[in-house]
Amino acid sequence: MVEGDYTYDSGMEAFDRLKEGDPPSAILVGNDEMALGVVHAAQDAGMSIPDSIEVVSFDNTRLALMVRPQLSSVVQPLYDIGAVAMRLLTKLMNKENVEENTVVLPHRIEKRGSTK
Image (cartoon, helix red, strand yellow):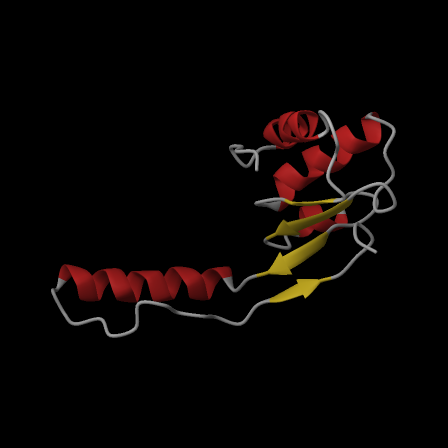
């Protein structure tokens, strides 16, 4: 596990740290921008995506479609996540009872060329 700040450059730095020793066969990246950095750093190191290493990201923004190969990405309902979080926060601020501590919203993986 490598911590980054969700930027392109931190994706490149994260890959450089991960490739030391025995590189992984797949990397799950926190967002699409950082995943672009991972993909480009891997390609700069002579690795082929997805043959040498597979990459999956989160958010499924337009950036996922702007890189070659296109990124496989976890699609999340970002608006709904914010709305549910605000409802829960409002209840907590009003000292109302919150029975459900876990909320699961619909999500899926959009498979593209960065995975086999």
